[in-house]
Length: 80
Image 1 (cartoon, rainbow, N blue to C red):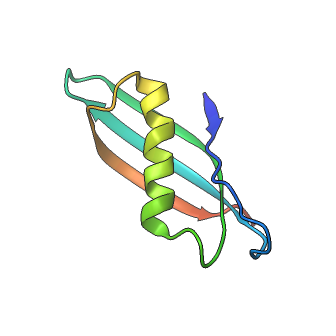
Image 2 (cartoon, rainbow, N blue to C red; image 1 turned 60 degrees about the vertical axis):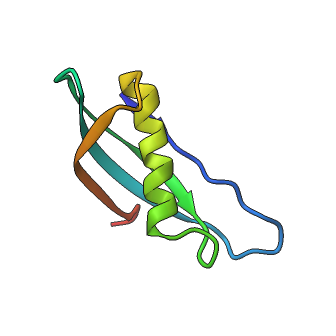
Image 3 (cartoon, one colour; image 1 turned 30 degrees about the vertical axis):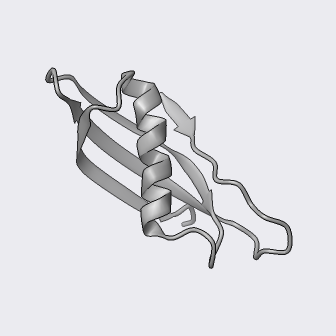
């Protein structure tokens, strides 16, 4: 399953950069889930931490709880 986490842009800011992310989590009851998606980040507005938190929020929807440990996280610009 692929989801898209989006951050909001403010007017007059630089164009957002599209990133691709992959995250694997393990819940407190032992379930594991891996998901990937795309997220826009605006230079000067969003940083690595705020983008990571947005991805975590997307994973909460996937696993149905916010009680999990991140086992793996990768984020890169969505380009070849």
